Each structure stands twice: as structure tokens, then as C-alpha cells.
Image (tube, rainbow, N blue to C red; front, side, top):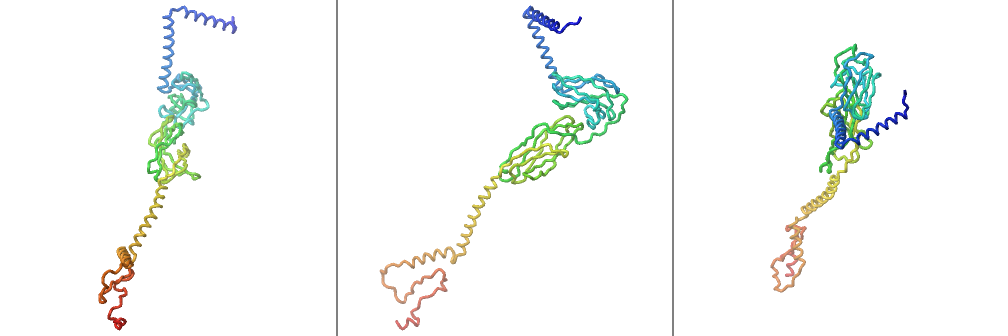
Length: 374
């Protein structure tokens, strides 16, 4: 006999009431024990999920070998809840080395997608397909949204050809995963026109399938409408597929530069970073030119005055003595004593622009003009 929906709901309600009554009839100690057991189970489940997430995502296969047309079950744990995953069977791959050639080596048409549940686990069935590249093969599980982790598990496709793994080539695919910032500060010398220096710091992730070793970036700065002038900066290290790394590259402007600049970082011909940089005016240079405009004319004026004093007739000492002699000649004192005798020579005042030898002499007593009068 088939039970209707109303009857099923009534049975469920009766069962719930009976469960409540049974719990109510239990002694307090038994109720506490049941509550503790339930809490312990919940905490154990949470701890297990936390340990799984801390140890990283894992993937397990229902079988390690299968032939074309068969089916396997792929399950995993420790993934981020709600993440969307992509499941593929790929050739030229090996755990720890990734898939050489990327998804071009995978059977993309027969791939499957899986969504991680609230506990960080998933389980998905997928058909066994022959990839376009020879084995060794792997089941490739990669996060599409919500998580970017990649896990490869070895898998053998029965009847598929095998070949040695080729050497990994290519530059990988680096993408910026976090915000970009300029680190460092300007010193006192920058205020006087020294070149401003900073470090551009950013986090990149390798979204490709090949590791990137010692990548070479191009760092450039632009101002206004001018295009950036790039210089190569090499970062030492290896970024494996699916991993991320912190990159720090030095950047420097020319001496005396100020205004709004743009810092750009390129890799493999693609611009990864565009970060503005505002540089203050070097006011120390302006202050220096102002002081120079005041000090130089004052120094020239003092030098000119010293030269004038040097080339003046008679020199500085002669000019001072000449001025004192003229002042004494102009001052007349009253005559209190006897008049000087005629035969006594009279003092002659020498003008400052005549030498004593060329100065005009007074008429002598024996000159023809004064002899008759005597």
C-alpha cells in the first residue's frame, strides 16, 4: 500500500514527539551525556575538516588504471567549501611536475566539473578518455573559482602510448593576485634634487602548467604624455605551477624629477602593474638658487669696492693724509707771536694730485721780480 504525503508527515511528527518525550524521561545525567556526545562528535568533525584544510587539498581515485570507455570516481578533501573544480585526464603529466603543455595535453571534451561541499570534500564520476599526448598520464584537478590550487594524481590509461616527458619550456602565466604598493621613503638629499627611489611590491601567481625560474621583469616610469622607458629587473627564484610569490623590484627616477609619475611592470610583453607615484618638488634647489641670487651680487659689490680703493691715486693712506693736510691748511689761527723773518722759508701745501717734485714752488727772494722791491 502506498502512503500519501499527508500520512508521511503525520508519522514524522509523531516520531519527533516521541523522541522529545524519551529525552524528557531520561535522567539529567543521561541527558548531559547525550549532549556532550553530540558536541564531541560535532567538534571532532570540525577538527577533522580543519586538519584537512591545513594539510592542503587532496585527491583520491577509485582505481589507478582504466581503459577507454570505462569510468572512475574522483574524490577529494581539504578544499575550500563552495569552490568549483575542473577534472581532466591529461597526458605528459606527472605529480610534482605538473602537465607539460597545459590543458592542450588533456582530454578536454570528456572533462567534468565538481563543486566542493560545506565540509571541503567532493566526489565525482568521470569517463576514462585517451588524452591527445602520450602517457605518463594524470588526473588533473584544478580550481576554477573560489580556489586556485592544482592537484595531479598518477593514472594509467590502458592501451595508450607512452613516451618520456619532454623538458618543460615556456614562460608560464604570471598574474597579479594582490594589490600593488610602493615601499620606501625619500631622504633629505631628495629635497635637494637627488633621485627618488622606491620598491614596487606585488604578489604574482603562476596560472600556467610550467614552473617559472628567475623571471625577468621590465620596470618603467612615465610622466605626462611620454611613454615609459623600461629597464630589465631579474627576480631570483622559482614559481611553480599553481604557486604564488612576493615580488619586489627597485625603481628610480632621474635627478630633480617631481610631479605625477606612473610605474609600470611588464612580463612576457604583458603589463602586470600600473601604479601612480606622486613626487614632491625639490624645494631645497629653489632655496639654493635664491641664496645664490643674493650672495653673488653682494660679493661682487664688495670686490668692486676693494678694487676701487686699490686703484685710487695715492692709495688709501695717501688719500687720508692728503685730506688731513687740506683740513689743516684751511683752518687759520690768529697770529700771537712775532712775524716770521723774510728769509725764513714758508710752508708750502702740496695738492694731493701733485707729487712734491712737480708741485709749483713759491717765488724766491733773489728772483728778478722781487729784487728791485727790496
